[in-house]
Amino acid sequence: MSGNSGLGDEVDKKLIVVLRDGRKFIGMMRTFDQFANIVLQDTIERIYVGDCYSDKNLGVFFIRGDNVVILGEIDPDREVQEKKLKKVSWDEITKAAALEKQKKEEEELLKRKIMTESGLTIDSILNIDDF
Amino acid sequence: MLFFSFYKTLVGKEITVELKNDLSITGLLQSVDQFLNIKLKDIKVNEEEKYPYMISVKNCFIRGSVVRYVHLPADDVDVETLQDHSRLEAREQKKQNKQHIEQQKQQQTQTTAQ
Image (cartoon, rainbow over all chains, first blue to last red; front, side, top):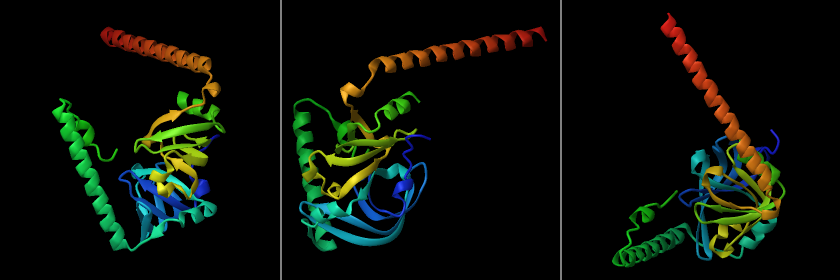
């Protein structure tokens, strides 16, 4: 097929996979199919909070295609730029992430309160966390 | 299939894809498939500071199901051809429907004859 968008070119390359719930996995892509189901080897999960990030080794991963948002090829030249971010421990990052999540939830609640007070019901929108 | 063919005419052009998670990416359309999955080259993320994980990415594959909008270069969209193609498709569908109804009628007359 012309204009084929298969993932053939990405096999055996280091990819960052962004999932619908916002998680990021980085690993070597070994297998794929037409649904973008993929197998990652030497997978790490990476969490970003502000200027910090942290990694956790997870091993081999099969990711079901419908959870995939983006498969990004990691460019070695651009990876250097990322070094500007500070690497912290996994415990620290999970704590920071929880704090950030809590802050967001509070903001959402406040927004919802103001909206309902002014006569708008936006429950249906707020209940969509993922897509 | 119309939009698949349409996208194929835009290969090599710069497009901006906005995803359902509000991430918006500009890049050169490299390829597209029947699910309207999109491959972009030399990408640039709008509001890059909000998405640090995209810094190290140059080429990416976007799953068709997560796309919200695609901003197209207006000059490269041939509206007339698009319209012609949709009319053609509509006409063919009508023809098929007609054939289907005629077939059903024939079957009915056959069964009543029996």
